Length: 318
Image 1 (cartoon, rainbow, N blue to C red):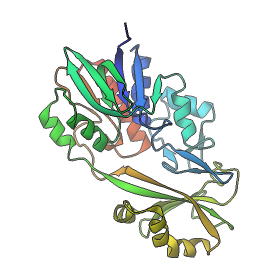
Image 2 (image 1 turned 90 degrees about the horizontal axis):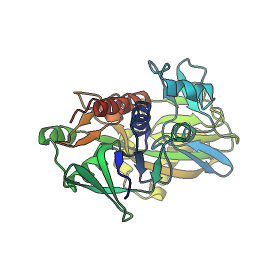
Image 3 (image 1 turned 90 degrees about the vertical axis):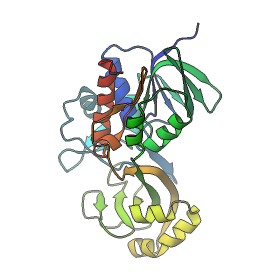
Image 4 (image 1 turned 45 degrees about the vertical axis):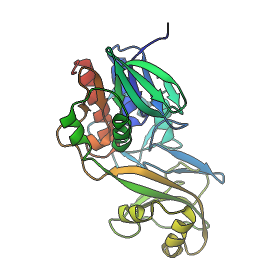
């Protein structure tokens, strides 16, 4: 007889990971995480290119109020999270991906499993994946971006609270376009390794060598503004690069090359769920939702949301 998952967590970003860790800590068995990607961590993403390395999602982490969490202590004590010159600001050792890999080392993770729909029958739920797999589970936590979760629920046959679902459908994200550049020369940044701007085409420029991510010098990550990203998101990368050329020439003085681009369709929340740090929208089943859009749009908020939905499950709030 096939084993039934007690809890299936869809999305292996930081909120899903912490939901799993919290459930495991309290003795819940048969927890399975599923992610549509080939890796774990969501926007805790690191990429190699031309002998250098880039973080191309979250650039650094603020941990105000969470430093006493056992999992955070483990990350710091094992030198996976490295504190920068700014107290309370951390980066991942050799890249942000290392944080997710460390946290999931003892969890059950199935990669390249894209959930398409959920069926509910006689107290159990059946997860239908794009790869043809159909898995039975007792409860589900959706930690994927809200838009993806909404698409899954819309295609599903599962009992939900319609009022709560209506609230969730109001939530939206800004997209982000990320540019990874190798420069012949170093550029000066305002801070230790990162420069933020509230205006212009780029909101953030990060020096991955100074951040100790890349062993090769002058490898930069540039995050495009919300306005630029939204306006150009559907364009081909070649056209995007052409639109950025003038400003990149100004920054790097014509002595650079774009090594890679990346698009995050669901990057930062436009708005936030105002009522709680997570939500269970199931009726007679546990169908939880969590993520940074329920809190503050940051890494620490995603952690709080993951712990919140785990607490709801443990309290049998169904």
